Figure 1 (cartoon, rainbow, N blue to C red):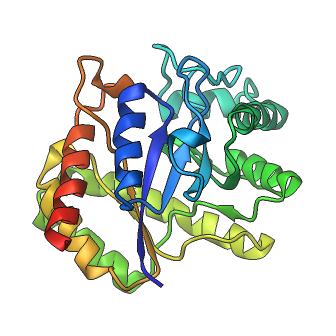
Figure 2: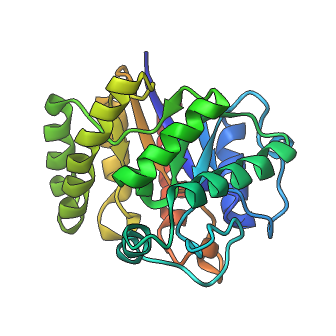
Length: 260
């Protein structure tokens, strides 16, 4: 039982892929969540055949037809909810989209052992139902759950305040609150999940390196997963406009050097 570092967004861009691959080679990461992206060439052999792989379901780019390729047309969670609850994106659309994305990764040698989603949209009940249904058809027994034991959740929010991420606390409160329903549904359906999932905040808001070090030290011997989004600094901002990926990458490397 130990704390695992999990990297999201592999496949979004070559720069993100390179950063994550480097961290895998250094045995820092335990899991990698991979996004299906036909505009970027990448294969399982580019990472490591022994790393645990998850499908990072993407309903954010062109959700009307659940595109698998990355492009400039992004959709906010609010618009996604509107499309979903007005019937423009139905249960079958979501299932077909997930299946299409999974097939892309499988054709590149990836073996999917768990499911999660870009921007955690599977926390929305209607999307979650489709994700659970797909997991059952594929024999995938694990789905990411945004949950944490109360005693650890208090420490987590306290740490966010201490390291300057006060502005991001409302978002995290909402995610973990909605995660209560997710956890209940997983418990009823027999879906496996990590009991303590730590969502790292956007790195540009405070002392990310200090927070990461604090949480890794606190949870080093606990059954915990810490979600990170590393990347390399580029003019293209790693493909999605998030400028903090390089900060995350350097912070992870720095902690590993200090630990060694």
